[in-house]
Image (spheres, rainbow, N blue to C red):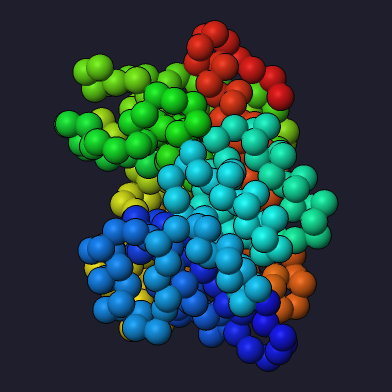
Length: 354
C-alpha cells in the first residue's frame, strides 16, 4: 500500500468487459485522488485498448499476478462476471486490500453476508458499485421528494426495459445460480436499491419472474412489488422483451406526480469514450426532462446532473479519510434479501414477508 498519505490511492481492476471498460476504468482514471494502476485481462484486443486509452496502466494476465504485487496497491475493483464476485473479493481481502465489487455483491444473500463478515473481521473497507444512485433522473426524484413538491409519496413506479426480440448470448443467460443470471439480478438490483434508498426497508415482496425467449432458463421479463415499512408501494419492471417502453419513473404523491422517460445519459457517453469532466457529461437533454404536476397543471422540470464519479469520490474519501463507504455493504445485503424473497414469491405465487 501507499506509504504517503498525499499520494493518490492505487487501484487495480479485475475484468475489462462492459463493467470494467465503460464504467470502472474511466471513472477511476477521472478521479483526482485515485490512480488506475493495473487492469487484469488476458484478452489481446482488450489489452490493446487499455494501452491505447491508459498508456501508463499495467496489464496483468490473471488475478494471481495481481495478488503477487498487492503490497503496491490500495484497492481492487471486481468487475468480473457475477460468479467470480465472491471468490475474487475474498482473495483480495486475504491479500490485505480494500474492495469494490460491481453489483450484485454476490450471487446470494449468504455469500454476500460471508463476504461482509470477512471484510469486517479483517478491518478492511468493502463497498458495492450501485452507480444508479447517481443517475440524473434518480437524483431529480430524490430532490422532488425532499422538497415536498410531490407531497407524501404513495406509489413509486420504476422501469428498466429493453426491446431485444432475440436473446443476447452470454453468462447472464446461464441457469447456474452461481452466475446470478436473468434480469432480476442484472437490472432489478438497480431498481430495488433505488427504491430502498428513497423509501427505506422492505416488509413484503411479491414477484412475477417470466421467461419469454424460447428455451430460456432465466427470467427475461419480470415484475416486483415492494411494500416498504412506511407504507409506500414500489412497483418495479425489468425486461429485455418490451416492444414499447414505459416511463422510467412515475412517482405518485398526494400533491403531484412526476413522470420521466428514457435512461440517464452517462452509460451511453462512457461507452462512446466521453469522460467525466468533459463538457456536458451527465447532463440530460431538455427533451428528456420529466413532467411534474397534476392532470391539468403540468410543468417541465430540469433534471439534476448525473454524477457516477461521485461513487469513486466517495471511495477515495473512504481510503484516504476513513469516511463511510459510498455504498454500505449492509444495504447491498438488504437488496439481495429482497431478490431472494422475489424468487421465492414467484416460485410459490405468494407474498413473502421479510
